[in-house]
Structure formats: C-alpha cells, structure tokens
Length: 362
Image (cartoon, rainbow, N blue to C red; front, side, top):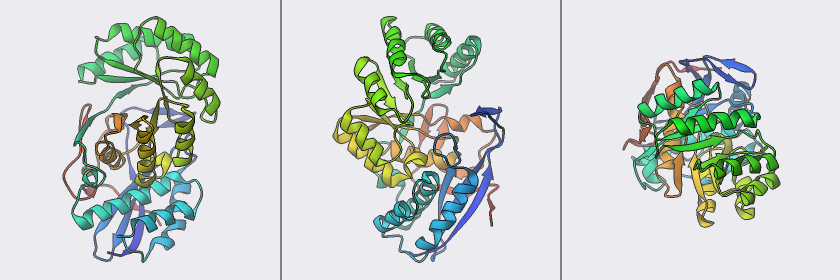
C-alpha cells in the first residue's frame, strides 16, 4: 500500500456556548482534517487542533507544515511505519499539531490495511475509559452549580480550573468539595498560574484541610522544571506535568529528575502516537503513571486519544471531555461517547466512516 496523496481540509465545530481563551472569544472553531490516500483507494484520517497558547500552532501554520512535509511522504510504503515517522519527526522542527495529524492518519491507514483496530494494535488492554469533566473558572455559585450538574449526569471525576488569584481559587475549591458527595474525585488545574513557593503553600493548605485532592496539574510555568520539582518534593499531593511535557526529550528530563508524579500526554503536544508511546513506555519503566489529555478536538482526536489510552496499562487517567462542548457531532463512526464513558469500537484503524462538512483547502 503506497501513499498517493494527502488532502487537507477543515471542519467547523459550532460550540454550545462561547469559549473564552487567551483573550480570544471562540464560538465556531475550525479543525484541520487530513486524508492520506493510498494507491488502493483506502483513506487514513487525521486531525489537528490549533492551540496557539500551548503549542504555538495556528491554522495556517498547521496547513503549511503539512504541505511542507507532504512531498516527502508521497510514494512511500505504508508498511514502513518507522521510516514514515522518522520523516515526519525530522522534516521540520516544532509544528507538533501538524505532525500529529499526519501520524494519526498514517496509523489509521495502517490499521485499515491489516483490518485491526488501533487500540488492539497498541496493546488492547481494555475497551473503555472514564473521563473527567472540566469545571471552568467562574463565580463560586457558577462553579458549584456546574459541578453538581456534572455529578447528576454521572461524572465521578471533576477537574477544577484555578487562577492566579489563590484566595479566590481556594474559595471555589472548598465550596465545590463541600457541595459534592463523598467519592467524587477532585482534580485541580492551576494552568501555570502559581509561583513555586505559593504553590506549595496553597497545596499544603488544601492538605491540612483534608480535602483529598487527587492531583494538581501544572502549578508552575511550563519552563520552570526546577520549580515543578520543588513543588513535587514539598507536598504530599500528586503533581501532574502537562505543558512542561511536549515530546520524549522533555518527558525524559522530568522522569529522570522526578520533577512530577504524573505525566499528561496529548497527541497535539507530542506529535502523535509514535512519540506518545515513547513517553508512556519511559514513564512506565520508572513507575510514573500517565493521563491522556486533549485540546479542543472533535471526535477524530478524541477517538485517537482514547485508542491509545485504553490500550496501555500505564494510562490510568483521562481528560477527554471536549465532545460535550459541541452542538453536533459531524463524525460518523469512531469512539462511542456516553457521558463520562468513552468506548472504542472494534473497527479497522480509528473506525471513522465519514466526516460531514469536510471542505478541502487549496
């Protein structure tokens, strides 16, 4: 099976509610969706979400990076996965979202050629997972209400967004913890908002109150690995590295130095399955568990992330809740999302049949 063409397109993802991020107001984000076409006519599907504030990737940069890499992949045999991944990794620096889309589509095509679902190809440990639900920062009343609504919908894990206003964040966390029933897991995402010493002080305060926080995600700036290690070493609560980990090199340094207790893997950050597996394997070797996360992605990206997450025993947590933000699902096939349960399907590759509203870009 030879790669004949790579088509680049977009799909619109209308949101149920306006999404505010990094001074931008988003109501209909676009996702880059590619189709890797084989000489047999079979098609592999991949997608990329533009997340300028995290990966530095915007729509035009993703499209142009894929166009730049494309000629180097045309004519190559799909069986040579290592060679194809080497081309993608070495063809251009950074541009992890574009690389993830190509990686995803090639693996999808490989699975289709051999009639195997990707979750089985990657390990087949289980077929479903439980995702948390993110409670975005707002007033105390808003956040408590949304937390109770989530629990009524069956969610058992809540990820609470915090801010640089530590006292206000503590007020919200305490209120949510008091409002929800016992057994509900509370995770905190500080989004790089705290300085190392104030992070330690804040987390210790939560510990002293017996609030039993499952973990705190990325308390300090992504570049501050010494600060991240300082926090990890000085609190009992588990610390999850997110923005500090992109590809295997960053993961290796954090694992080697024990700078975090957990690692959040996102395909858009690390460049796809190939590098995500490397990170997961390194972490497992050193006894560090992983969580599978995502950006603001359609069911293509969620299916891809879930396919790897269920396959690996070391993937013990998931933050794949973005499907609830969209007005409609334009993807036919793929993973089945039912509240906090995501189940992969036993179909070749990603199991995606059709993409409604896909428009090719020139």
